[in-house]
Image (cartoon, rainbow, N blue to C red; front, side):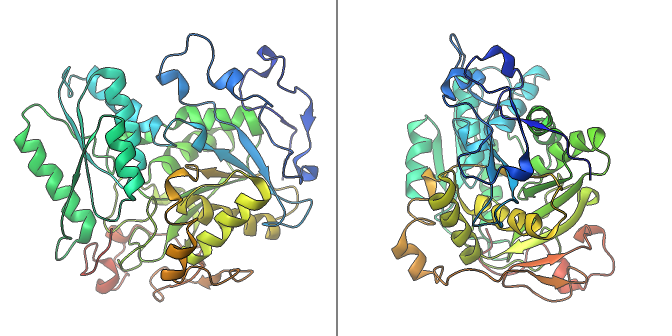
Length: 411
């Protein structure tokens, strides 16, 4: 595989910043946790003089991740989207609002209403502040209390649904409440993150940042929830690197790739509905990861690389580490880390919470289980499948695995 030199920089214009190294880095030899692709003082370029709020979003650094998730001398590049003010969904939050305003779908001063498990809520709160819109975010009791307080602190109204829908669980209950609120507030607007093409388009800058930071990319590893960032980034990178492989990371209990919906502990990835933005044809394979396996990876990252995050970060790191161990040494692997650890101090990094939910079981297996087709069996631990189908358009899937809204507490 082609493996050109990557520059040790988090900013596309490294030459403009005297404290950013312009010396090339050989990623095959960059296995030390401190050998990372960002300047010593990231504030010098992340918060330039005279910056506006939207200027704080983007140009996030990349970090070389290696041992103990991979053997020394092997590793992958992690795009640290937690360096955005609220995380990766600051990008679509701003972009969807700006495009809706440009089309006059969202009128000045009108309310934004959306369902969220947290991160998009922060992005929409940011967009509301920038453009002068009140924001109402519909969530459920599973949202961390700290995130509820943070959203409120940023000026959003948090509306919590009291109970799950009998058939569609919490996710459907939230969507039904959004419809009620739209009817109550004339002129209000819902971004519809699951089907809005602007959600996908918002990630074009992220893809271009990766191309400038890392150079040639062989494998892109993304968590999948709404499908926005996996579709948006891969669409652009495939034009630059036609042989790119996209590996999706989902949670057990999610319906996105054809498994049955079940109660889910992890937030930020997975779904109990079929988001229209998921670009099934772009994926080379999919991995399902359990909460305990994600917790282990999150904590390994925290102690060895300092940079870590939440459920999606742990799941993506686990899969990217396996790919770095099993693919040829010169394979250039990039993983997208959607957020940082702050909102997960009461869950992923809380020993009492993890013990109560059986999440401290020790290291996961060295390799995932393998399915020949996504409907072969219901998975409960780390499992991969190289056959990726759109469940809504797959006539070979059993009816029980095609229903997007089975009974249960799926979120």
